[in-house]
Image (cartoon, rainbow, N blue to C red; front, side):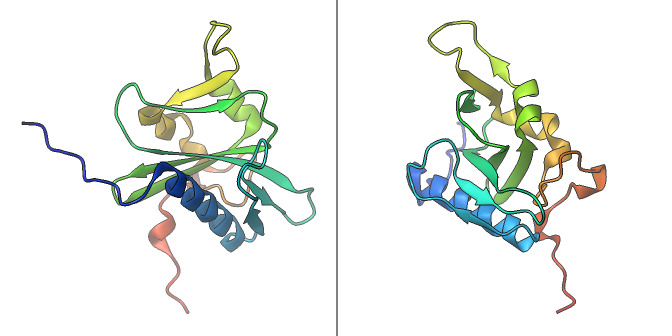
Length: 158
């Protein structure tokens, strides 16, 4: 008998909103002030203001982790500067803040005219493809390998 998945205590809409707020909070705590834009805002979900740079538009896509044919996708016509893939793996949250050009470069595409506008990745491959951009809350175009790791590490010096 296959183990059953623990039922979620939230809707997909609540999960999406929570992940957008999570991304805005992580960016802000990393020194890049950010806020969630109103629901149904076109193209992006969070706007961030790095010091000395123009505002950056972040599209947040969240999914629960699943092996196999489950995908994280975005519309190639959406206007954003960064893609943040939020993968919820049980009690763990993994965030990948990826420059748009890198996201586009690694995305799968369909030839069918019906879905040609979609760019997508298998959820179980996101961490391998974008490992370098995990927890990239300072919006670094080319983060060093040392940026990777758990957000939960924290600083207990307070």
